Image (cartoon, rainbow, N blue to C red; front, side, top):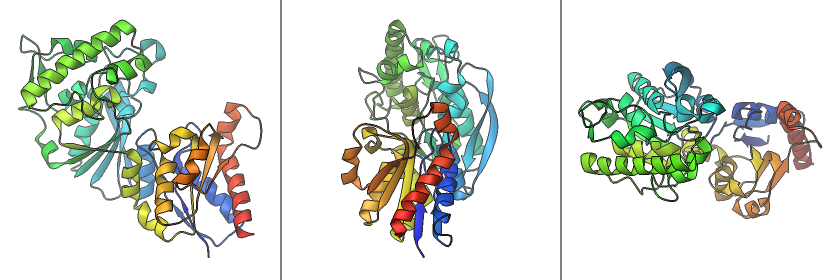
Length: 376
């Protein structure tokens, strides 16, 4: 009996990682009905991380009403993994760019307060570990809103709380953490992010990511200046020098905020997923490993899910076959990294809408053809 380990990421806007696994299984079963199939939905810290890790560990989603990026109430959710002790949060669920209308995107006013509320709710569920994915942010507030939601006081010259948003950090005079949620000291916080940018400077949060969130050149200068002041006050009041830390600029400086107000660790998202799903142990005994993502190109080797899976396959000398909605430039460089073969799933020319809608069918058909060849 052949043992297949299926460890794909989601195909964005088409299928969740679990749905990709299910489509892969359909293709395999058409050729080999009695195959042993181990399904391990994966993620790399970005969109789909909560869904993938909840599915992979038989956990559950917890829906919470939180403060959205613009201060309005939004419905968000996070995951409680199967162990009941680990929460997985995507900051984008509460503070993401996709939940802000394009004509209202303004990183001077958007806040991470809702992300802090998700963390607080996870603490209320008595978790021992919180994994936080930092992709897809609409904010540039250095995680100040998150800190305020967790009890930190960011005070102006009149000893009053400064308003939310990166545009108000110039009013900051003092940080008081005497009322910061004490449970944070007893919880392990892991940041899932592949972003290595510092908080400030030419490669910092404002200069690199600000324009993507609606910042004009003038706004970028203001945000940069404000984050610089914020970093100086953190250094003075909290004795933490976070301005140039690798990853501090992730999610508009939420990385820096977590470094300043919690004792956190930063890891590549795919490494966390591999650990949580115990993929290492599963691949050891596999005959074939299948992975995949919406699009594969030279960027895949910079921490994307298929790359992490391929590295494990290479470690145990297992063939790793990857599927993708489209194949871009530079995939030749992936073959030396543990990929045995990479297949595009599209049957021919089609619109983007058709490609997204027909994703499951295309994955199943491609899998069937690959397995027919393997069995032959």
